[in-house]
Image 1 (tube, rainbow, N blue to C red):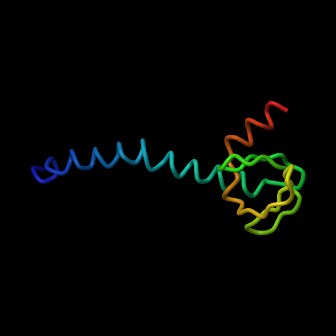
Image 2: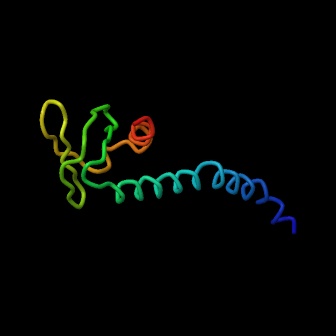
Length: 91
């Protein structure tokens, strides 16, 4: 019993760490993966670096987007879920 009480603060700290840091990060990663897999040709997107465009072609891990200055090939992970959702909400 005494040994268990010695580890109680560490256990409590781990539980708090899990629910406030680890679990939300896992949930966010899952949402981003779903967003990336749900992209389709014609979607308007914004990249994490701020480039606006429309998806022209899709590959397994890359996308080709049309911008005002031409076409760009990007990784799917370079597309910002939040900014693209805000862009599509306004339009």
